[in-house]
Image (cartoon, rainbow, N blue to C red):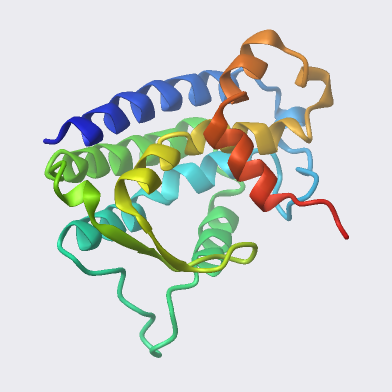
Length: 193
């Protein structure tokens, strides 16, 4: 395992622990609120984070081998938004414990894959296919991993839009005030021109 991926693993473990504590602190009413600037409910971000790891594992493994995620069966590029929306909808009625149980199994497999990535491999370019708000393209793999390690607080920030009573909570503000979280939010939530 490379030093870069070791840091990523440490960060994702800590961030997942904090994310789960945050989610479990919310009431059912809070979890079922719509998340502004999203088509999801507050609870849906937990399902998204629990289900994305298998695709990330495939992407990271492919990148480390010098490739990229395979295209869809019809030859079109992988559509991460369609993928996310379908899995989130299937889990909307699941209790958080079931969501996080699935997420723990997915995360364990992802961590095992990350442990196989060397520092030399993190110097490769990675193809990111883009999504509904960002164009695809090549980016440094190590840089992507460093930012992706903050995926949980990035989406806690999204959830807080539907939880205005918590927006000034010092612990949550500290956790979601980070260069990666802020950069993602600025890129994904640009004001209308």
